[in-house]
Structure formats: C-alpha cells, structure tokens
Image 1 (cartoon, rainbow, N blue to C red):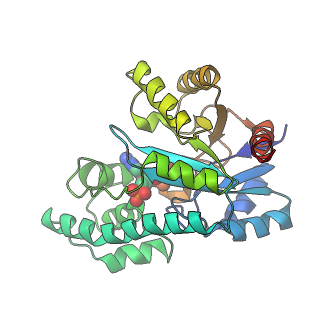
Image 2 (cartoon, helix red, strand yellow):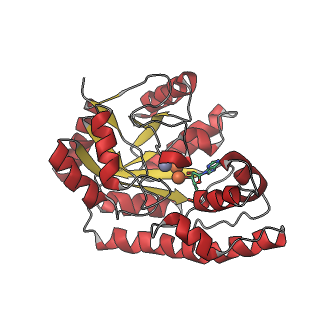
Length: 286
Ligand code: AMP
Ligand code: FE
Ligand code: FE
Ligand code: ZN
C-alpha cells in the first residue's frame, strides 16, 4: 500500500525541520505522498516539491489556517491550493500580520509575569520563519522559566494562561472561502482540539455548520487522537458525507514524540484519500 502523511510543519512555521529535509525524512519513512501544511504560510511548499521530484515523493501543496472558534481551537487544513492565488496570498498575509502584532504583546505580558525575554531571542529561535508560540516556549525553556514545552504552555502561552494573546482574525467561513476559491480541498485539522468531544451533539452540529460553509473533510487520524476517537470522527464523516483525512502533525523537535508517517496506533493513510481529493477537484470543474 502507498502510504501518505497529510499534516506536517517545517521551519517556515513552528516545525524544526526545513522542507527539503522533511521530504528526505518522508522518503526514509517509506511515504509515497506528503502534504506540507505550515501554519498560515505556503512559503515552504516549492522547496519541498522540488526535493519531492528528486526523491520520488509526491508533495501536495497545503496550509493550516487558525480561525476564530470557541471553546477549543479550530485549525483548517487546505490541500491542493493554488500557490499562485493572489486572493489566498492576501488572506494569509492578513493572518501573518496579526501574528507580527501579537509577538510584542506576548513579550509585554511575560514581563508583567516576571519573565524577561526579548523579541530578538524569539526571532532567533524561529530562524527567519514565521514566529509561533512554540518559539516562545523554546526560549522560556532555555532560560529556565519552564522545564518543557507542556509547562511553558500551561504557565504562560495557552488560552487562559498569563501571556496568552488571541491572534485569530479570520472566521471559518473566510478561511474556507480562501481555500475553496483557490481550488483547494478543506479538512478539519485534529477535531479533538475543538474540545467538543464531551458533547457529541454539539460536535456534530458544528461539523455540519462547517460543511455548509464549504468544509469537505475531517482529520480522523492524528497523533493527538486515539484509535477510539478516530472511529468517532470516521463515523461522523460517514454520516455527514465528509472525506476522512489524516496526518501526523509532525513538528520536529518542537513535539518530540510525534514521528513522520505515524498518526495514532499504526493507522496509515492510504493513497486513495489523495485520489478522492483529486476527484472532488475534477468534479468541481465539470
Ligand atoms: P500559534 O500558531 O503561534 O498560536 O501556536 C500554536 C501552536 O502551538 C500549535 O500549532 C502547536 O504547535 C503549539 N501548541 C499549542 N498548544 C500547545 C501545548 N499545550 N503544548 C505544546 N504545544 C502547543
Ligand atoms: Fe504548530
Ligand atoms: Fe494545528
Ligand atoms: Zn499542524
């Protein structure tokens, strides 16, 4: 079986592995196809595709967009988006701007909590890629303010913690329009993080709403979701007529327990999933 991994991050967002090396790791892991899905940017895709052509690994252009949502977080994956879409580029630019405006605010709130770090230190951690909270976490750990990433988020960076700043400025409808109008296929990233599992009827209602807004899939398989959770999302996908997608959400050493190509107890994403996405795109053009 040709195996795929449809969710991963490079140094262009909060992963620690550059796109080219990510493709090399994918090759070593025996993957036939990957999607690079950096947060709010397409910047790493071309490099990954170039390496993919060299090594015989198919690289799907992807992106993961954070949108306004309560009570948990909602990230939307976009696959096969047009890298030349001006509208998508402008939309992502808006999100990136919100990130830039957030960074000094986080530094300020940390200072209020007695933590002395500078923006320059965080910038160095991101190596020119987009800054995300995991980069703040690394500085906090390095300077002894937290023992690991989990603690850094709990104490300072998570929603509700002392230095949390909300940066999400797109609605789900806006993000879905960006993805669909640029020819892409949208899927709900790690639905567990929506934090609606305790209220299945609410989860179903939200997923239905997202479908009416243009969502086409749901990521049943993710390294943050158990086998049982995956079957709940799979059943939901079947009831609502959504595509089942999956990926590791690999971030390199920012999330050291996640391995490329692995997404919860040995589940594998077959190449048929990619064929199904292609079919959706073709049918849309007819
Ligand atoms: P940002 O996009 O800057 O808001 O950061 C969100 C990213 O931080 C997520 O994609 C994860 O990579 C990471 N993250 C969020 N919550 C946690 C957590 N509790 N522990 C570790 N990493 C987290
Ligand atoms: Fe991330
Ligand atoms: Fe995510
Ligand atoms: Zn992700």
